[in-house]
Amino acid sequence: MSRQENTTNVSGFILVGFDETQEFHVLIFSVLLSLYIITLITNSLIILLVKSDPMLNTPMYFFLMHLAYLEACYMSVIIPKLLENLLVNPAVISFWGCAMQMFFFLFFGVAECFLLAVMAFDRYIAICHPLRYTTIMNRSVCWKMVTGSYICGIVVGLVHTTVTFHLPFCGVIVDHIFCEIQPLLELVCGDTFLNEVQVIGVAMMAIMLPFLLIILSYIGIIFTIIRMPVLESRYKAFSTCSSHLIVVTLFYGTASSMYLKPKSSYSPSVDKLLSFSYTVVTPLLNPIIYSLRNKEIQGSMRKLWKKIIWL
Image 1 (cartoon, one colour):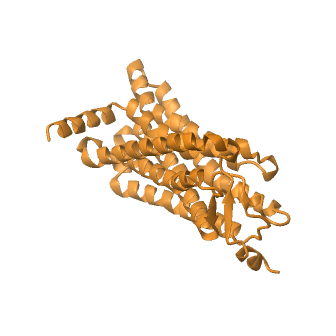
Image 2: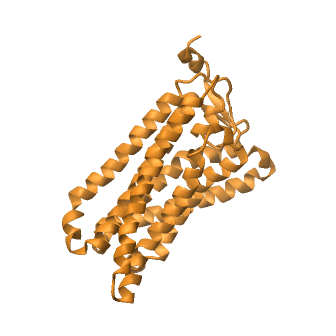
Image 3: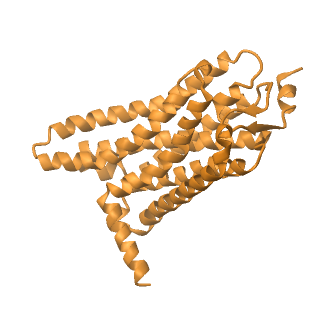
C-alpha cells in the first residue's frame, strides 16, 4: 500500500490534551477562557492605539501592531479547539482540520520569529544610526519587512504541513494539546529520521536565523550604548530595547526547546507545558510587558480613556 493510501485511511485524530487532569477540566477551561479573552482584548487594544494615535505612527509601533495581530491569530488557531476539547470526550479533530491547525500555527509562529528579528533591526538603526533612521526605515521598507515575515511563515507552514500529512500514520491518538509536528511524528509508520532532520533543519532556519539576526543587532546596540557619554542617554537607549529583549527571551526560549531536539527526547508532559507556554502565556505577557514598560503606550491609553469618558 502506498503512503498516500495509508494517509487517507486516517480520517481524524484524537487529541489527548490534558487527559491526566480530567477532574480539573472545568477549572482549566475557565482559566484558559479568561486568559484567552484577556489576551485578545490587550492585543486588540494595542492595535487600536497604534491605528488611532498619530504619536504612535512610527516603525517601532507599526511592527508592534503586527506583533499584536500575529499573537491574537496565533492563539486563536489553538485555544478555541482546546477549549472545546476540554468539554468533549473523546476530543476529535478531522484529518484536514489537524493539517490546517498545524499550517496556521506554523505560519503565525514563524512570521513572529522573523518579525521579532525585524523589530531588533529597527532598534539597531534607531540607536546606532539615528540621523539616518527615518530614511532607512521608511514606510515602504517597513511594509516589505512585514510582508517578508509573513511570506517566511507561509513557506515554512506549507513545507512542514505538506510533508507531514503525506506520511503514513499508524495511529490516531495524539498525546498533545493540538496538532504539532513532534507528537504527530510519533504516529508515523517506520523510520522518521529524515523527517526529524527536516524538522530540525527548517527550525534552524525559522528560529535560529532570526535569533542570530537579533543577537547581531543587539551586539551593535550594546557597543553603541557603551560609547554614549551621558548615563541618562544610555538608560533611555536601553529602556527602548528592554521590552523587546524580554519578549524574545520568552518566545525563543520555549520554541527552541521544543523544535531543536530529536523525537527520541519527546516527553508528552513536558512538551505540553512548553507548548502551553508559547501558545498561551507568551501572547498574554507580551502586550502587558510592552504597555507597562512603554510611556508612549501608557500616554496613548490615557488619551483613549479620556475620550471614552467624555463621549
